[in-house]
Image 1: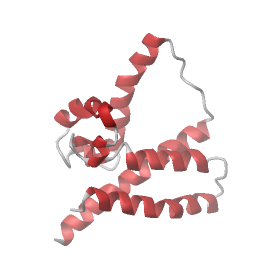
Image 2: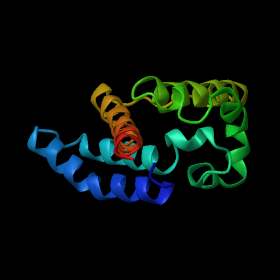
Image 3: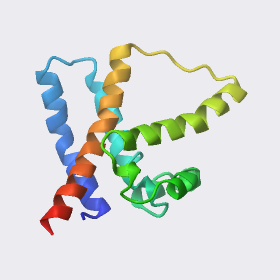
Image 4: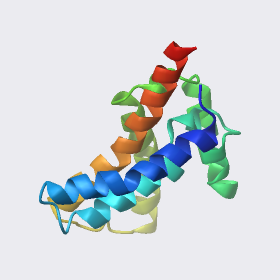
Length: 142
């Protein structure tokens, strides 16, 4: 299995290729949310948040304690490393934490164009796929 630095290095190295491919497919305004989602997915919403002492968890600083319950519910390389359900669990977990807080503080959720939201979600998802691919591919090679 690759180390966290290896995952991040590959994810960041592939970002220009992803953005170039998206541009070639006709995306223009959506490149910003795609790239931002990709960086957030690589740096802060990694499948390795199921390990509370992982680099992605430490990037959250003192807020990494928010991920402690997540790390207790999801064992390492279990559902959190599923290519589709893993990112969904992290997004739903964050929503469960943030929406009540926003409601209590009276913060209105910003509205964005649907294409920006979808581009951002795809951006979050792609590094998750890369991470899981390297975990599974390198596990078979050994």
